[in-house]
Amino acid sequence: MSLPYFIAALSLGVSIVSLSVSFWSVRKSTLNMRAEQSRFIDQQWQSLNHLILTNSDVASILAKKLNVSADEARSAQFDYYIVNALYISYNSWRLKTIDDDEFSVSVDGALEYMTPERLLYCANEGSYSNRFRKELSHRLVRLQQPREAKNSVNALPGGTMSDV
Image (cartoon, rainbow, N blue to C red; front, side, top):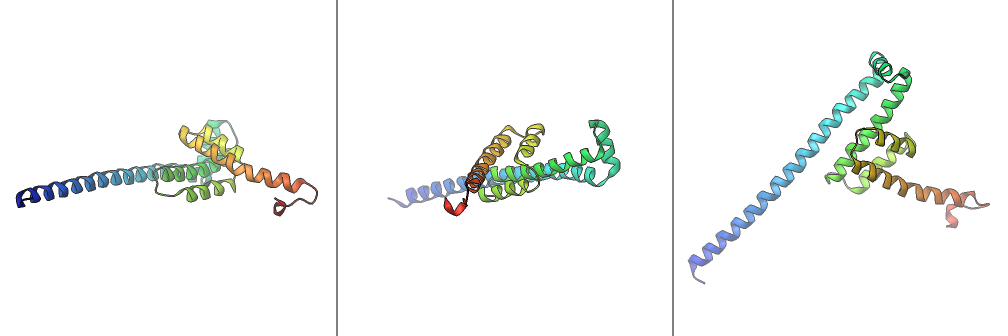
């Protein structure tokens, strides 16, 4: 191989590597931009929820619009506060900024504040994506299976999880 062909091949190789790095960089910055946009939108909703929870005048306005008591309006907003936080975790998981275990911890955390049924109700009533609803439903079913097995074993006379 003569020197000019070697230089041309080397230049082509460097160009291909440079193009690949450029594509990777654009893709990575697009994902980061989406994650930042998602966080910003969530911050706005969480600010509104916080305002309703902490300001009785705002809670009264919402209560009148929904034809419920201020306490009922606050309770509902608290639930959506939790679901919104879970939704941002879902979006971060979907964009691969958090891993599956971290998203599972978020789902478990939400269940400390509300029942699975209430969580699904809020997800279905709110303006959340169908993908989020399906993923949440799937995860809640998976979480319920071990709990149901544990409860059925413990319901037997003398039964404990160590018996399984």
